[in-house]
Amino acid sequence: MNNEIKRRRTFAIISHPDAGKTTLTEKFLLFGGQIQVAGAVKSNKIKKTATSDWMEIEKQRGISVSTSVMEFDYEGYKVNILDTPGHQDFAEDTFRTLTAVDSAIIVVDSAKGVETQTRKLMNVCRMRNTPVIIFINKMDREGRDPFDLLDELEQELEIKVRPLSWPINQGQKFKGVYNIYENKLNLFTPDKQRVTEKIEVDIDSDELDGKVGESDASKLREDLELVDGVYPGFKVEDYRSAEVAPVFFGSALNNFGVQELLDCFVEIAPSPKPTKAEERTVEPEEAKFSGFIFKITANIDPNHRSCIAFCKVCSGKFVRNQPYLHVRLDKTVRFSSPTQFMAQRKSTIDEAYPGDIVGLPDNGIFKIGDTLTEGEKIHFRGLPSFSPEMFKYIENADPMKSKQLQKGIDQLMDEGVAQLFVNQFNGRKIIGTVGQLQFEVIQYRLENEYNAKCRWEPVHLYKACWIESDNQAELENFKKRKYQYMAKDKDGRDVFLADSGYVLSMAQEDFKDIRFHFTSEF
Ligand code: GDP
Picture 1 (cartoon, rainbow, N blue to C red):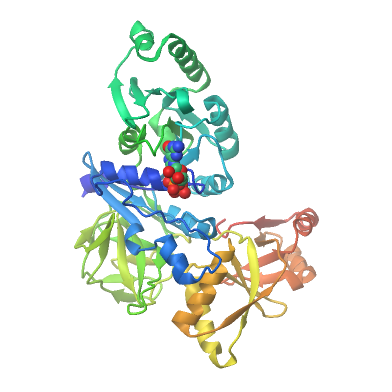
Picture 2: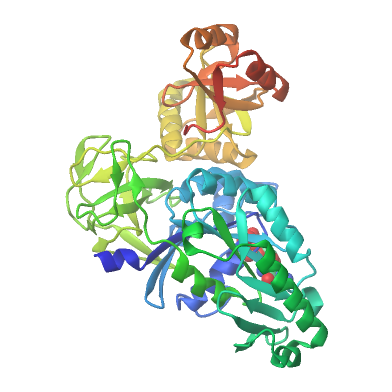
């Protein structure tokens, strides 16, 4: 069992849309032998259509359940890649997936540098101390100066970086990368579109000049000297404790620098880590099985309404047909057809180890964050909710179906589709999302799965903040003063709905003893 744990690498590839996540994922799968040809992996990107109905969204998003987790064997390692939606309207989904990974690879476009989504995703990694490796992609295009990019990564992502490879030029003149980690030179020829030569060269030897030309050789020597001067030597512990992010350069499309990244990744990335439960920390090596649900995917096939709940195995061995305790319901459950996922197929499995993701057929018994165990009543720590960016009142558009609507809203919120806040002043329900598409998805699913109709009404809000204070009197005073803007989240916690950035900063100014949180995990 310990060997099984040690050889597992469960991670996500994340990026701002268009940086090259899909392309890189596909190249990894090629190396893993899971697919034979490029182009086999569907991009799960949404091309926004004018008539963006839910089915169309789903089709474009390619949520075929099978692409949610991709696993393959590579050099004796078992690699589990957790797929995340590319579209930023589904960013919550991505945030949640990040709670189930042990590390992440962040793809950055060499011309664009750090983008909005990169920053947000990194914040989530930082919150959970997730080790990250950064891949600077599209070196075959004219991009920014590598030193500038590294500075930007450090500043914008608030993490120290350590280049483990170094590019020789870029764009038209791109010649390859020097692999600092292995002290090897990898040369690139654009028409062959792959590493043509991988040679070990002493960078001070004439051989280097012969390979890349005198001026590029001396530039490389200067750069590497500077790199060594500026960045302390690489220590795996610093990466694993999420203090330093190793950086690689390459081109996913040209399959250049990808194998180096993968080779280094499997070697240094952490195997499944201990998971924090409210009661105690659970070690992966423990004999008894435990796991939690981090994602629920609706089945859009109307003939098979059931959903799939994705369970990350945290400890012990998951076995098919074993009785497990569903802690929240205090009920024993068994799974006769748990599934595992291979690039494009899924198959029933008999067992799974820590780090693995098991797909469990779900007919409404699971909520995001639910814990399964062999009997111990532990609760894996709640997954964070983030302050939504868009808000709308949800109203019942068919008075005969108010029960259905209520049930639909409850279940969709349990699935984590969006967040619900109930205004304490007028009792109205407010749905918060990160993007417009989510409202469309909710409306469509309420109609098609719950036979209920909703209507959206505008509400002008800027942010939702979870509030707390040790000063009870001040908290009460605040709630009284802001009674029109106080709401409860799904767990009954106090949330302040600020209608502008100005109002929020005034509130922070006036109520010094109150802490305003922008995520629900604090
Ligand atoms: P995602 O949105 O992050 O999944 O990005 P994709 O993998 O779909 O890539 C976005 C676009 O960038 C596509 O047109 C890719 O062909 C292109 N692309 C990806 N990697 C590279 C690269 O290394 N060089 C160049 N020139 N284009 C790339």
